[in-house]
Length: 516
Image (cartoon, rainbow, N blue to C red; front, side, top):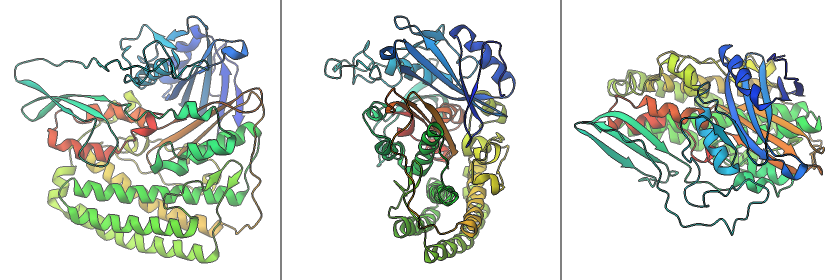
């Protein structure tokens, strides 16, 4: 059992992951969080749900992780005064999650130092909450100004540079407010949440299969990770295990998603230091992977390939040969390009020592995923909590201690080569299966399931709550960008403003994934 507390009784959730869930009183929440933190654990996700129609009030859900697995704490909250104790002093990553939970559901963290809105930009009026079951969208419309209270930095020679939310390029919106002296950055404050799409509300009116399509579109560059996590959560509720062929296929797709994104990022990172040659070469390689995806699986980004209960694609013998040839080609070409990056004095001068996140700060703030591994945070769900078929693959985790742009580039190279090795192993074990998959159409009533996979950016989690009829009462997808965006504010300190695009790209966080 991962946590011991006299008032906490946990039940095992799924066989796919070491995950447990249990109810705990609001007064005991901080003690459990403190115990997990002091034991080296961290916060994965925090969200709320409205259960007033079931005779209750609201519920706060907190997912923690330690060396033994995941624990989901369900905290009942009063219907009229849905308050709970602030835990952001224990887990700083909780700050924005708590503010988002208030914006969307009206549940409030008490005694915290930061109660500013996070996701509400004037699209719905204050005092109305979109994720409440009785939310009236028409009555909640407003034209009130955003008027967000940014922190002011004062001093002789200090001035501000506001950037965004609209940027010079086809990227998602985000506002970055730099406080600088000369060219040196004293402070950066982010303002996100401009792409709020109502995804969590949309899930409430969808079938299980429709929800799978939506989950795969939470963050388009991580469609495989989200679709697998969603399917894992649903299969946990239904107590269904997909076929071995489906599980091997899912792992193959996930590694292809990792390879495609790492190729794209390595190209962009070259471009940001004026090595347009690197950008062109890596994107030629990425384009080849995407074209092979379209040919073999019907979609360049592998959308809708994973469904609850199995997969919706299969791979022929000829398709295996195409991927094997692709792996050989990528291994040869990327080794050449890595040598060019390593030996290019101008590139290394920009990479080394830029945007440093020390291991101590990374641990304190909960940095995760590839950015965390570049700052000595040895967490990888494929290693610590290897779900099938990763439990048979012996994934070699890449970690470094420098925590700068150079370290995040090295981790990408190492993980790319490891993904090529994994694809070859998977292909050798993937057995052609022409049998039609047994897909899940509906889930048991009043169930709760959780799924988590290591996406290319970091751990992607999806939680599903079902209602009395087995429908989707609440679905909460969680992107690792929630944890990592605050670290970007620290990584830029004492660097110069022109280095921000490079540092930002070295993290490459999702705007939309943390703004549902």
